[in-house]
Length: 148
Image (tube, rainbow, N blue to C red; front, side):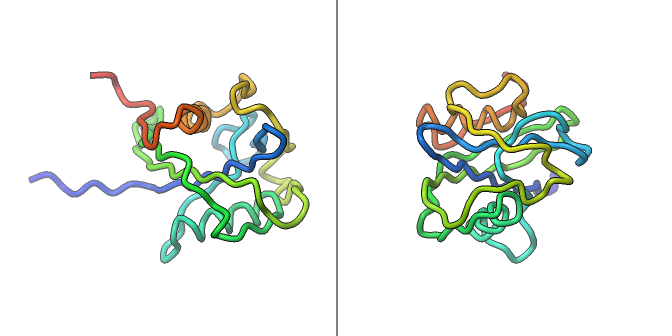
């Protein structure tokens, strides 16, 4: 009998300003260091995906987002290169309080604004897939799974 599948949930925040989105250059984390990603993190026990998005934006880039200003962008069912499945919930907003700053310099080398349709070559593929699904209007997509 098959066991129920359990997976990690990642929450990503697409901050939009002047037709660009905010990216964080990862460093010192052991995962995708040297690659750009969105402000993001793992869903914690007892936390909703919306609460996670608000928390991660505050922790990583120092802004306060009202939950009413978060809009669903897409969902990605991702399979990591190591074979670990994940669910990525992507939100978008262009409204927040505070100035964007690198609030986690030990985990982020720098912040950069980029057009979402021209992400840097060194963007985490999972991140790029989510942004691509959002841009194309796809509410859900898969990434990293073998094509059948």
